[in-house]
Length: 628
Image (cartoon, rainbow, N blue to C red; front, top):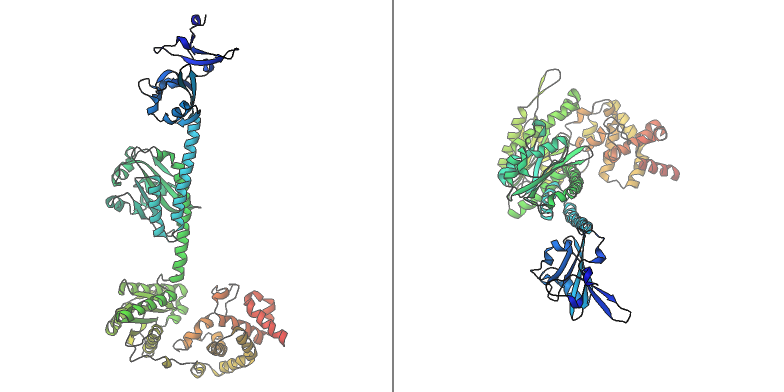
């Protein structure tokens, strides 16, 4: 009866034809093994998503159904024990059921005993959902690892150039790209410059060293810079711009290309170009990761630009663009140590623009600034690349000349003087005004054996040049000694410029201010030199208010007092004539403002206009009143 239905028992099985065995328990404790032509348990399932296979003890397929028929593991000509399913099948033969995911399919295996034989039954299901989930998880893991590596490279570098180099190498290595190119700029007014690249030849990169989209778009990087939109091409050979550039500049055969603008807010910081390898399917999958990398890179570049700008402000003069006083001192001390070690010369030039204050007052500060920039152009065009021109302060400049002796230092100073003498400034009224400068020179080791001594000796020589009629260069003669410089202010020389009325008013202010200066000096631990300078400032205050400060220009003591004299009218809240605020105002000027408000206006401004004054000084004056 079973035979009539096409169902065979185990006893009817033959090696030529086998079906799908099913074991049925019988009431008497025995079992009946049926050989079904189709796997009845799966009859209602889609044969395109489910499969079934029976393997003999050698791993050869007895029968397959559904998707199992199309899988190479169950080819009757080969044993599945020679495939990646071997471990799963061997476990089933040892009566250990198991499951295995492999290439988008899930395999379940179990052993079945049929009389004297022992076969393995394998259920196969389509696991495309699992495959997609695994792919997503794998991509997420790769992305996390990539971001971790790239992020580490970005955080290890604070300055722009090293950051760009580290970034392109890490991105190319992590994403296995053919080439990576990175353009960036340090400020809004600079062009985008190719700061780092990997995988691209020199001939190709030389053509795109700078991006200038405003003059026309000649490559996809300029296109992305112009539109600030990403650019993507599945093949560099399919785009007119990339086929002429990217297709030829890579050492490896290129494939897809992605160009990403690097922006922070509305600012374009740089351009990142990523070129994939030929026939790399992962490139398209990594597009979201690339965008994330670009976002992180944008912030890192922006931070590097801010850091470098801060460093530049700390070491360069913002008006002229050359080194400031701090940078000059650092450079001088380093080169001085080298000169001592190598027993070489070191030349120093101090330069002062003649009659600059008068020029500033007559033509305005903008004109004065332009003159200073013209002087700096002369310095840059005259000195060597490894010399250092610096702004010492105001209209005074310093030039450090490593390896230069006395004769050559004086010759360089004379060349600078001659070039400045030929400068002209065209005023708003149409007049041509000539510019001149006085220069003082000193040389190690002849003049002095220490850095500060060189600067002071050059300053003394500069003063000699101005005394001799200006517009000349003078070399310091002899050996500079520290005691050559006055230890205190020459009050007689200073007060000699005051009119009788100004002198009486000045001494009157000094006498009335004495108790307040004494208290503040004690509380602030002022030096003897600072106390003398404060007294001199009080003596000169009437002259300053009469607008005759220019008469003191040639006095050496004036240089010490000038910063405080120029800031007398400044306010602590920054609303004064020059906008100086807080600690930017010299301490002596802040003290002078408080003392004058007390002795001249009975302290009324200290209460009615408190933001004008340093709050710490007001507190100290208040403690003086309490003690009294």
